[in-house]
Image 1 (cartoon, rainbow, N blue to C red):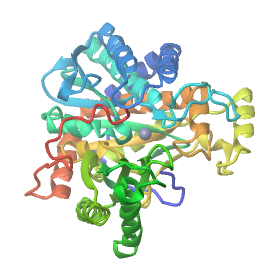
Image 2 (cartoon, rainbow, N blue to C red):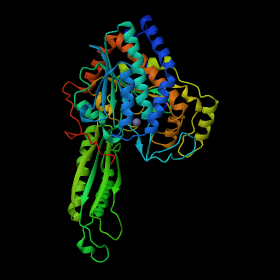
Image 3 (cartoon, protein in one colour):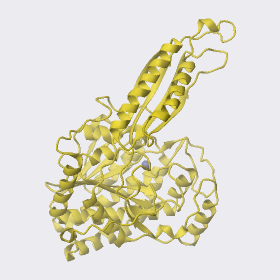
Image 4 (cartoon, protein in one colour):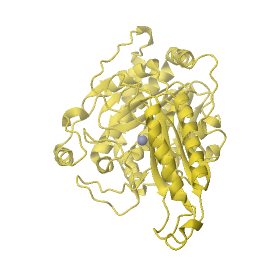
Length: 478
Ligand SMILES: [Zn+2]
């Protein structure tokens, strides 16, 4: 996600820049509004941090965001795309339509206090990807823009997309599949990070699923010949997958965890399960390698006398970048700027930076705004990708973590639960709000962004989800 080595490509499209006095005045109002509400949004984010609800179980988090939007005058469509915790909130009417994404799912096994030492709070999950901030800043941006629309009579619609289960659940894919983004002119999003950046990078396409093997149990010492081990099948499959690594494009990533390997050594396991991810910068490669992984499962079941089934859990495209929108968001982030750590935060940051797993980077980078185009092969996967092939989409990263922190770490949970997280979140809220104003005020930018989308995806592009027509995997965290 992070890259400091790329030079900003200056996109010289002067007629697209929005510098009018109208826009500047509007932005100043919206920024003042956000500043005044920072305490409220800080407390909302802290509540969601405490709820720490995992994918598709984000009932309290989703409700809190919906209620806040409703109170602000948005109309809410809840439980969209057959997902109880997904929602679309709208204000205004007609075109243009600008959408902002919000996420709010936590990660299992990541409970952590908001202190600079590793210490579980005793819960099962934690916000190690900062989605409590993601959701909160997005509604903050939308509400502040709505105030401006109401005051000025600005035409158009602002929408917040409440997107559950980003972490492996591919929530947005079902929302794209349900046509919820049709008619939207631009989608904005952001992600917690350890620096403030507009990267306009792509991401890895990803397909994920659980392979379940069924054998026969027997006494492992007295009558092993009567048994057929489901764990043998998992091990045989993994062995084949590990050999396959040599024969796939080198940017491919294959990872697995054994989610069930039997219960006791003296019982031949009659059930075992392994959870796989396959990733690549190109979804065509993901599809191909995934099919080969399924063949390995089939071979393993044949050789071990077991039966198998596969349940597809996740499937996302690679992000389609958009230079036109990246320029808008980049300009706004430069204008907003970063923030400074106060003395207490500096102490927190200095302490946490000495813990294992942290990179030793300049603590001042909460002020740096880097705008570039990082190596597209790096990083993870996101279901934002499927949205980006449907609507022109752009996102940014905000420094919600101590510089040098990686996502999915206890250090990310810790900083996200204190003032550093809240400060970073407001950088995102302000940048998204300002960018949204630019988009409302400039039909020309929206037109160019759409032209770029159409050019990049090709004339014969037709969206087909990597998940086929499966229903949302609402129980994938069980
Ligand atoms: Zn995330």
